[in-house]
Image (cartoon, rainbow, N blue to C red; front, top):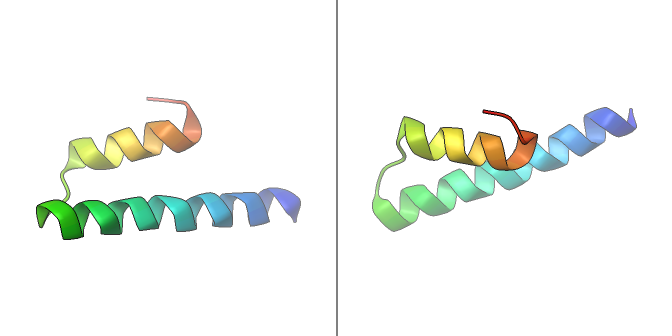
Amino acid sequence: EERVAQSNGDLAKAFELVELLAKTKGFVTAADMDAIKKQFTGKE
């Protein structure tokens, strides 16, 4: 349960970052997504 809650929280934060990028740049690239993913997972 706790792990799921944590990943849901991470997902929400990641979504906020994507949304912010989309509003700022007007688009989000695969590279942006990879960078955000790496930030949350610590993996490539």
